[in-house]
Length: 347
Image (cartoon, rainbow, N blue to C red; front, side, top):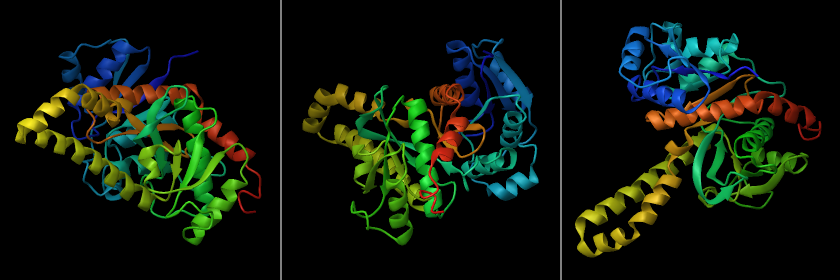
């Protein structure tokens, strides 16, 4: 079997290209993956020259332009068709690379994938996955994360879309967490089957009729950090708001602990005694340990790393992408969609 090749958008992310190059260098030493760093070749080569890496595993593909994190993605891509994210996506579409990894502008990443890749049969729109730490472990690997989707690839979603998201998310959990029967929940404002707007009620009905999906019914916001479901399905508007809220709460709790440590001796003493446990909890629930989450629904593998990713997170994102390629994730999703009965699609 040929080695897996990952195209990495070297210019994408808050700390690009320095941290992206360092992450790729680390990955080249830890794995047998072939890596293509896409971006400003002179700048990338200069960084590689001062970073320990396996030169046999890393190549550089020049892309003369880049898209900033806060730029309007559609306008930026139209103005700069040779931007690193667009070039990297085309390398995957052309079969030069097997998967894409980027920590860059999320909207630009999704649009670049949409322009270069095709949607799988039965999928009307792609979904951005996002991982969130949970109290419950998931799958044979005991991952402390649930997958939430859509995390913001679109705003609205029909019942058909939500059913497709469930099938795609379950396929991802099987491949990455080695979870043979991932539990899928539909985010709503109550656990009853008839709770929520009409699109949620209809999606609930269809998911209950969908074979091969361990549908646990509606889940509420509090169920996400509890880990009640391995995969949580919602539309992109709600998903993006929920995920940013949860991420903000996690960061605030950690900051409050640091503030308490600085302010009062008694708190400092107690936190010192709990320090090992707090550090372990922070490490277990840190998104950097996971690396990245998928953009699902396309016929190619794409992994979106957090915009604030540093070297370790980039390296982990590359490993996640390689697992998805090895598991033939797009084909697995296509098979799952083909197995869905016509009644589950509302036909």
